[in-house]
Length: 490
Image (cartoon, rainbow, N blue to C red; front, side, top):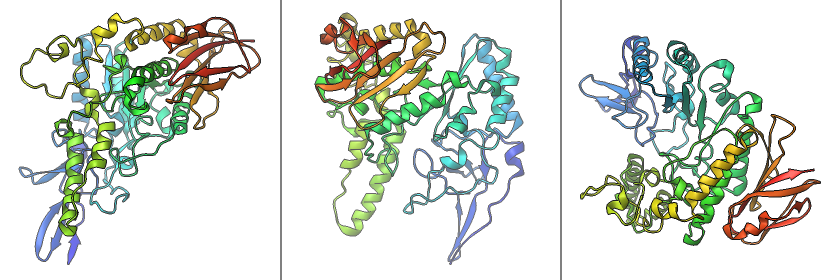
């Protein structure tokens, strides 16, 4: 017989303690008493989100690694300590803060179980329960009043993961609420997450990407009283060239330039991750997955291996991890944490003079992709980013603050959208046309009833397209991963 004891309440939890502690549950089976975590929440790095501590004979909450216990923001003393830390750095002159998973700082006091989405596991993905909790906005507004409002020109950008409702997201950045300057929303990052989690296969389509970009460009537009960021890479994701390209060497730079054009022609504050500006790809296949150091990668691998080995012990079937390895090679965080290859002629490509192994592998393609080589080559990805960033600055009213209006949001190769300034009538509309596939000779028919002048193109060999006017109804042929920015005139 098995029974579960009642979860005990903790007055200390919300009044005195800086971390989130709980006595947990008690299980009695055949006269043996076992202590269990207080609920079924799964850590984002696998296993229970609760860590047992023998010294206190209690569990503490750690949604991430066991070395990263969640802070108890319900404790006023804890909040004051956080504010003191912030003032310390602000007094030194920093310009603001990136706030990690800021929508997770408030938890429901009763710690309810998460919905069961994986019946084969005792631990369930619980973001729907611990994100955007009951006091998150109250605490952010208090943080503003107590700290940030006393320092002029401070910028804050907060991570808001597992939150795809525009109404919920806007609450963090609407100016009258006085919370965050801007935020990171993760729908694009999650687009290739499969039904079993990040490292399971997803059959996403190009229309999904188009609709996701459109959703947030419009939901957080400047003209609607909000603000947004745009980013395709971070320390928590794989390389965009690999994720959104065909993963062939011949198209690598084409993909990188197309994504650069996409990034620099969308609204909001653009964030560029180290290595993205030279088109760094994921770790090459000649680097074993066993050398990937990230805790998320390793824990997922071990969890799935343990499950499959247990099943194999019953059936005698061999353990096959090829599907897991494929997804890790595509999506692991390790890919965006590799050392930057500055110069292939130097030791460790100029990143470090260490004689021992680096903490994470250097990609084996450093001779092909490095900063020194691209800096010298006019048609490199690096110099294309420089050109497009200057172009974005030149057209700030249209590209940064303007409205976003897509054309068809289907699975066709071309993603085309208008960028329209709301500042003055003098600013002309801009049409961005991107072939997001490896298909060549893709014909796109220009819309409207006017004429177009080509302002920029990703294809260095197609500079002839810059000459002369194009007219509405005319078909423009795009090579693989080619993009164009066109100015429209009536």
